Image 1 (tube, rainbow, N blue to C red):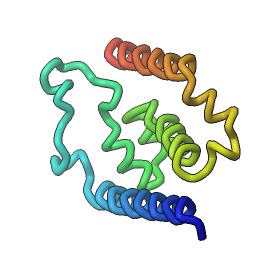
Image 2 (cartoon, rainbow, N blue to C red):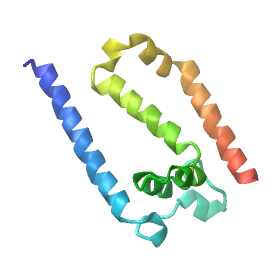
Image 3 (cartoon, rainbow, N blue to C red):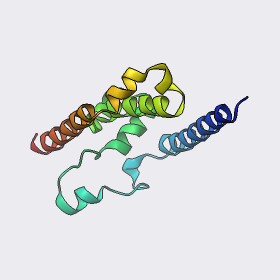
Image 4 (cartoon, rainbow, N blue to C red):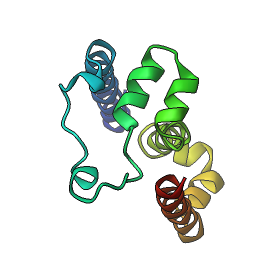
Length: 128
């Protein structure tokens, strides 16, 4: 086995172990009970940031309450899917298997589009 291949297995193992540990914490502890820190932006301004509700949404997702997760934070599920896709592309050889997809997702136009969506969501969630 080549050293680069072994390195990918180490990366994969580390990522999987971290996800399992973090998932276990969020599965066991309910963020509504005060174990987790509150959003500093919300505390200072009274407005929700784009990430507000993410901890409760993750807890709900781990308990398979998908509708509830969407109510807490609408962007979390698509963001998680995008993050998992980007981790696959950058760490697990997806860049070689799907170079066009990688170029699109790491291109300036896509990144600015995501930023625009986040800003619109941020404004909309504080208006409605």
